[in-house]
Image (cartoon, rainbow, N blue to C red; front, side, top):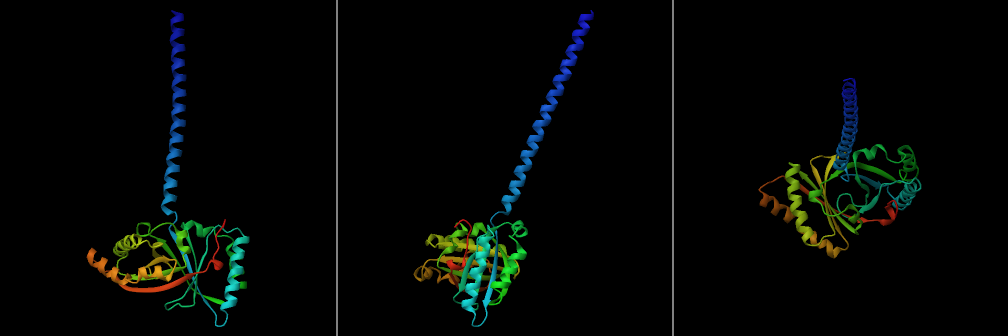
Length: 263
């Protein structure tokens, strides 16, 4: 009888221990699962921010200082290289439109948090004041958000010789993006080098959309001569009227005033 009781006690103790082990394993499993789900959620959150934010700065060289401005800006780009900046910087000059002769520097494919960790902001500004500000004035700095569904291919295609930069003033941003989607499909079908759509989100009028169309020659540029007619056509097709003004300017790419890490 005593042995029977001992066996029962031993069996109960064994079962309790097995249950404890099972619960510990389950807890570890659930903790790992929770960590995995949190990682997925965080990755999804970060992915939702990826490669959409760009920043433009427009410079106006001072009278008679264009050559010094170019030299100074190139020296400033070297500062970015020496300091191992991981951002890419594109440089263009306007060669038509109201900003003729002004310089554009731009960086793309950022999340908002990137602007919290820009390379040495104070030193960057000090170098600008030394090499660039004496010869040029900043006209404006603004940020944009890329609209992937109304854009083609990756940003690095922006290195084409010519860019047609079109500013649309609109009443309804989302409706205007529908028009831009149609434009993208049309120009891609005509083998344009690239077509990008950006919404202005800071530093300017937020009822503006910027289109960038890329070309390697003036002959290719002729593909865009009917842009205004296509905008009218697609608004009529979609039965909307939201674009109130269209302004077109042309920029020429300056590889010697651009810089990219690992290039």
